[in-house]
Image (cartoon, rainbow, N blue to C red; front, side, top):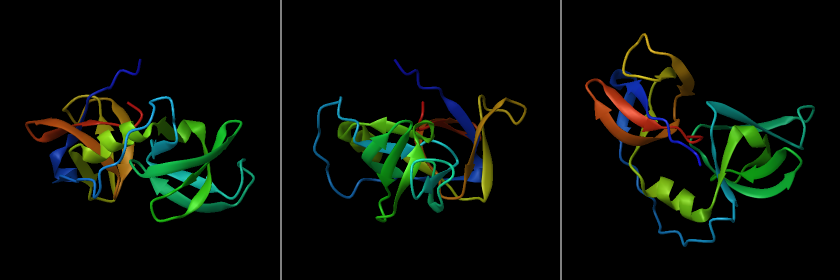
Length: 155
């Protein structure tokens, strides 16, 4: 069971955006992990499975991806813009169509600054859990004082 950690982000570094999916997606069996979200600040997509292969593009945290195939610890994914490349399994969060639909229909925030730090608690002195870059999409789970409470793609 994945325990969703609640993280706080300084409100000054994020612009609150309520994003909605443009179309309703059909549900599939929860065991069908054919979709994913980029779960790191920026993930590299390569021309083949392996770090020796050429970098073809990148995806930022919260980008929905379609899983095309798997080879060992690598998966070939396609971005919403149609770019394709190979990513490591630990850089994505595989999910079912239903889970992706839930994410798309949820309230989200988008990072509108070049770089921000995501913290464990609502304090600038709290432990840093991750970083995020401009355009990262994070699931909104409330707010407290000057902070957003968010859920990262990897929980």
